[in-house]
Length: 146
Image 1 (cartoon, rainbow, N blue to C red):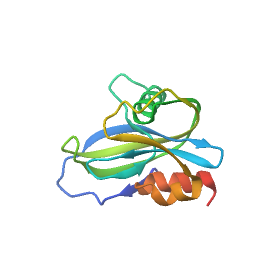
Image 2: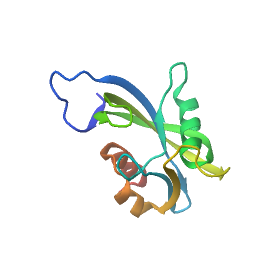
Image 3: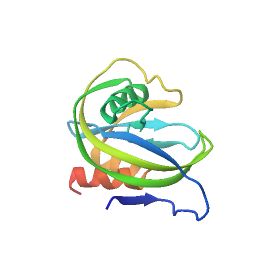
Image 4: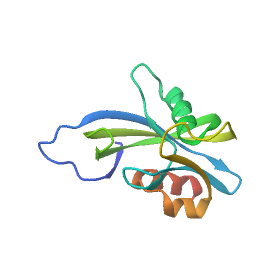
């Protein structure tokens, strides 16, 4: 059974399935995170939605690059969780299936392409405190063996 994080399911609400791929990106003693300025400023694991016809690994590479400007290597799946939430940027209620990977950040190729995002290398312990998503935080804590 897949763990569930986030808001409670609202009875009678229709949720659109939204699979996504997200990465824990360790670099020495730090973690590469993305900071999203809107709709609510927050630190996140880089990643996002898997587009139709796209596989999770392909989406992971694309999303990490768009949100951080970094290329990654050797992604390895750690697991997945479900999240029921309202996505204000799309104005939809979504059932997100979040596939979590760990990968090696190779190097930056410039600033993030996605508007409102910035890449930040943060000490691993502080990253755990800053990541906004409960599910992402649970995977990060497990990865860091905290």
